[in-house]
Image (cartoon, rainbow, N blue to C red):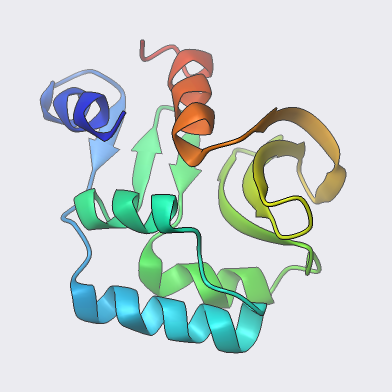
Length: 134
């Protein structure tokens, strides 16, 4: 999935905007902050995405940069999930600490799931389709 994403990010007009990948030092900081403030590390599959692109936009979908992820999650009152991104004022892309799965949820309501996934890659595939990129 990351290979497809990288290809789309290099294609002008694809709707996918990728940033420079995150450094290993920044990822270590992210994980330390997540352990301390969120109660656990960010899932490794999202960390792999951050190595490719430190945050990204897919048409209307926005995925968080490493340096913003912990702080922005602290501003929310959703301790049961780690919010990885959002789609406007409609949906959030989250990792649920309770069931260890990824979900697209109604903005701010972690128990109102639009879709659920075993892996981040599966969720990302769905986002690409929903945002009419593939």
